[in-house]
Length: 416
Image (cartoon, rainbow, N blue to C red; front, side, top):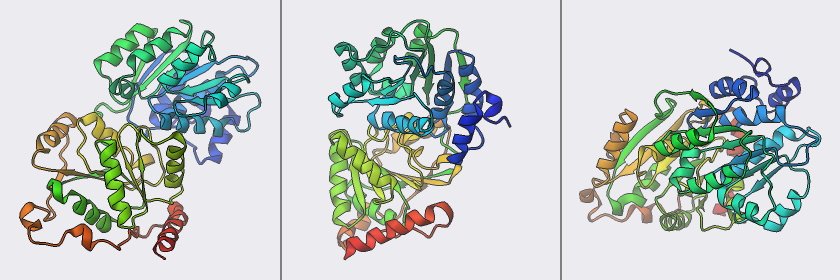
């Protein structure tokens, strides 16, 4: 297996990677880095969680000119969370590099702070399409000398309607640039975008079928709408997740479920587009540090979310397509660890579930835990009976043990 040195990454960068516990490149890094180092355009199709961020960051940092006083690398992402995540990864790598700086630009952030930093020597900009275009129109970001353009999570930018904005941004960059496009799926619109703006790109596909990772166990549980909350609470109590992401279809449903789980004394919080950027960053910080166990989120808010230790994903509302299903359950089972994805579905949801199975060529284990309408009649509502119960994660050993202790102690303090 090739190592980072053999891929052309410098000894200094390799030592920095080892400080983070990264010794061997992932398959996407093995294949993409040599092409990027050679200056070739790259289209990489790989699932989330495969290490694609380092596949473009590492070679860009090797080739960047620390003496140049203009933006050299532009990384376009669909969401603020992903922009911040990539920026954090870059900051780790450049912490000991003189003369290299990175800036995240996204909506909801103080524009004046962005403008102030842009006046300094920033070589790498990571941003969302809307805010990037805002800076372009203001004349505060000049892309005419960009050497590297990365379009990350390209299919999601299409999914949430950013493709025209992305094209406007591309037109601001020179044709001499090197372009890298990363995407979990390759719909026709993305292929057309690549054909229009890329020069003889090298195509990389890490997995022939874009199915779920083998290390994520998948279960679908039949329920009825009015039993959904009680079913979820029962599942949380049964499986006792260390950290879990719970997906809902809309912001309103996220907030409603958050209030229910909070009233049952669960350590939880919500993540959706109506929150201020400061609040969203605070929520993610608390989740990463284990202060909350359950993150209730919409698809867009959680796109690109990469948090160590997520053991469970709950699809409270069934995803509407196979792509969203892959994205959601990809939040667990990161870096080869085991994960569990549980999807709640009603009789009306069954055709959607069948469609997901057919498109991904998988069979999801079906279960019925007695939460049918006949079982619910005449019984006390389960969510009333659950009212003072807390989640105690199953015992863990190794790297997560210390963080789990903090979570458990946090629960105790909440109950006092």
